[in-house]
Image (cartoon, rainbow, N blue to C red; front, side):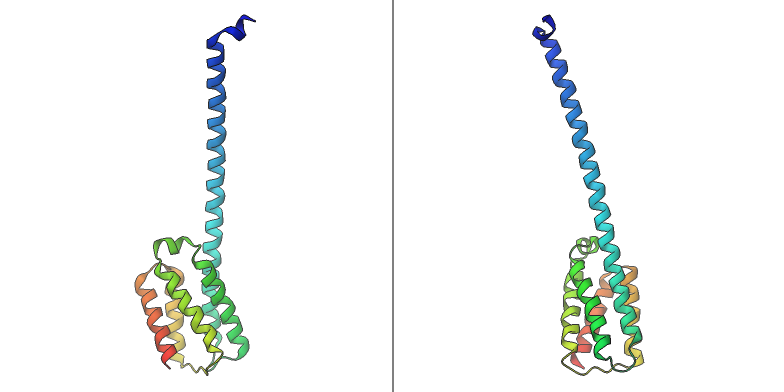
Length: 155
């Protein structure tokens, strides 16, 4: 009974409990951080995969895409546009959000107007999308993509 009345015993017990709780909080935060990092990597890889699908879709076009080609392109662009705001790339380059929003809008409108592409146009798009896949935060590539979108809208 003397042990329970001893203030040193209570202080030691309190210190041990505080250390155990601090360690448990540290481990929990560490695990949450690793899980968040894993999810971020998955989102980034899904975004890049959809960017590659956009590239492949454009690469398969001949002169004028049919409705199936447009559906594949629209699905890939929509997915990339939806994912872009959650990528780590958007944190470093907010302009990426605008570019994919414009691209999504352009692809949706392709259904309502005839499209004809030359081999040079297709090659230019593919080069831009390759550069974008290599470095999604490159401002010059994003700017060139916006200019290409503006040209495509005008034609």
